[in-house]
Length: 271
Image (cartoon, rainbow, N blue to C red; front, side):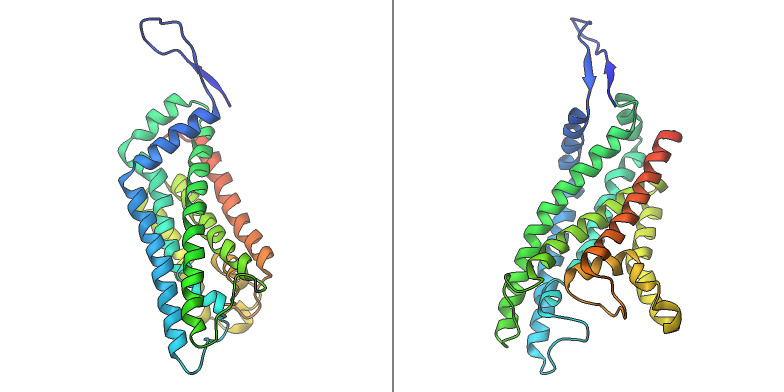
């Protein structure tokens, strides 16, 4: 996974090895230099915290309490499902932006083995997104529980499943974003990748509710969003949800397959 480049300069003989660490640093520089990075992450944080607080406040104001399948924990983390759109768009733009401008050719010229570029993008995105959304997830949880506690509905972080759910929200968003990067690398078109991401995470799951229950009971829990959402301590309308870590493993499996296909295409097909 290393290659050697000979830069042109006064000395003319110095050789610079292209290592994964250097590619990672390069991808981090590009990532933080994008105007869309800060704005999109900020939107995701605002959606996570703002909508979580809104749903918690609405629940606290209702005499009926929680909706079916919801808990104090899942209610405060409801913003996760809206934040995933911003995270998904960021993931797609991270790779398709280079294809649309032609910059990907320069990136692959510098890194002729190609795959380190993909690994670098995935690692930079995963680390930044997880840490950012983890902070947003904790904030959303504490604000939501403060609002729910006014009606004696709130829980604490030490309650069963609470810490796992807060961490799970950040993990869910990170894997959703990695899936978006893989779609972007596969399709190499911003509109097509975002449309596919929205279809998989936002359109197909609710459409399955229109099908007969006998048909959906045995597969709907394996859809990526439904499988990963169990980490947030709610069933979200799924009749037979998977266990939290099993569901998360299923979601990760989808992402891993797509990343594998993206890596294969990156090696086999010219930019």
